[in-house]
Image (cartoon, rainbow, N blue to C red; front, side, top):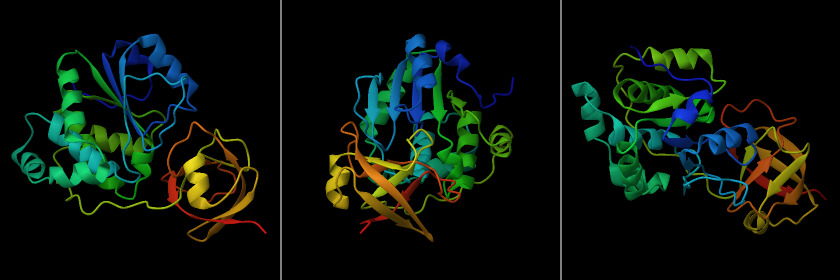
Length: 266
């Protein structure tokens, strides 16, 4: 029977191992509840390190913002089986050292996931919609098609674009594009999030220091042709230089992360 991408979390309770790729847990109570009820082993892969005792997972893997194409390529290397000679040639040509370094995911971490997966009946991968909004989404979609067709992984994309889902489900050995140099998101980065209180920019102490802003200050956030104003609030659970930004007045952003310049409002 043809395997298709799942679009809800209902089957997670039947999963022995769940990989969350880019899907945030910190403001996703329904997903947290599903995972806790299912008692599955969870590997949480996310660029935002949010330390809270309310989050329960077996392993956390922090990866670099924007490196999702490289991560999908790594998953091909470790999980694809019995594929076409062309796809196998693509996998064999991957520069694993480069991909591991640029994504910040160690090969030993992925090998450990494979070992866990080999010991269980079901391994689910819950994928963030950001993968479908990434600037390399077309190649990512083809890689997901390969994973869906030639790996034991069961993919879940909740509320995904029907066109993208259909392309993944109907993938038939399309040629994959070479993974070129991955983008770098140095400096201050925001992640827009609909769960953040209106007009707030939520960041940790490290973000506060690098942006040179303090609790309660109004700031202008500049990127592309946009300038939005927010009030900065510190959340000590947030680590690193990514801040969470309420989504009001932000023009369409298919990918939730953006490198920005931050200035205090005089």
